[in-house]
Length: 488
Image (cartoon, rainbow, N blue to C red):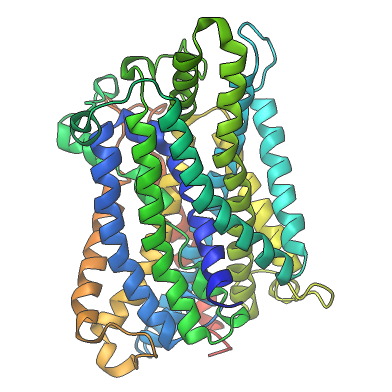
């Protein structure tokens, strides 16, 4: 892999056409346009600090182990094995949750595209739990099959994906803005606030902060460029470039996408209405449909529906690419962990196919893990929010661990690679750690009041479960035999 293909895989995993499409409804519910626009810019700015710190570390230690190996290299001798173990398990769990969230987003987008394309009154159960399960399973199957092929196949598809995301976003934005007969004002797009009164969440600031999940779930997975280091030429430069530029380019392309959607809203008051064509659960689709309906008039509803469904295929195809690349990154993480005997069945999981030169066993185990994580989400917005929060928290804590050790032990354990931040490295690392600490607290808070077993945010419970599992296994067994990566 070179600069373009390495960057392309991480850019496809971040996939603004996946995260922003799937969670735009959440952002619109919690805060509305002001959170969607300014929240995105703020999130991108602080995420650049995290990505810059990770890129600097990656340049010094390019390896498929990613944050797991970075942690081992940077932590002191006394704590390095345990710290690497914890970072690895958090990263692995977060990645599995990210894949589940991505594929579920594809399934729900596909269901809503079908609903939009169907004539009014159709009884086809496109969004039933059984149909969602079918879409979900077939998408994961496709991602697993593609990742069983050679790296050249995946790299080729990643290259197409980058072009699809960039050009597709521009085409989507131009067409939607051109079709929409009326557009919202700049004051609405950059200043309108939705207080989410039905959620019972107290205070506008709290509502605004909850809406940041739309942006932060999208901005995960950029560390995948580092995990492809051992399959990249000149990895000490290529991999950190991919990590940082993925966030920067995603930030620009994502802002264009968000502006096009928000400016094109026809009637904000109907977007969350359960009686609309998408049941009030898919705001992006409803915005596109409303624009075509308003342009075509009531006598051309079939044309409007078909045109809206066709335009929504832009993010739909992007989500398919994203599912593929997410499984690629997941499989490399598990394979690297297995290579160092840190998971059950490590001998089997660490094998690389002599035919495709890919970790086939690790690929299919991560596909199975994502499938199991996705089952509770079928028909449950609460479970979807919990899984996306788990993905965001798990990954960002795993990013923070090596950054923390780079900060406290840097003078002893960190020798910069060819890509480094110089004197800016320390303040950037401090900003990154403060941002991750803020996110960790934020995304375990309740998203509805009064809190019941039905609307409880289970993200905190799931993160605690991962920590208890990994720490418990360490105390009972792993500390006796795991001494860190064998490939340092």
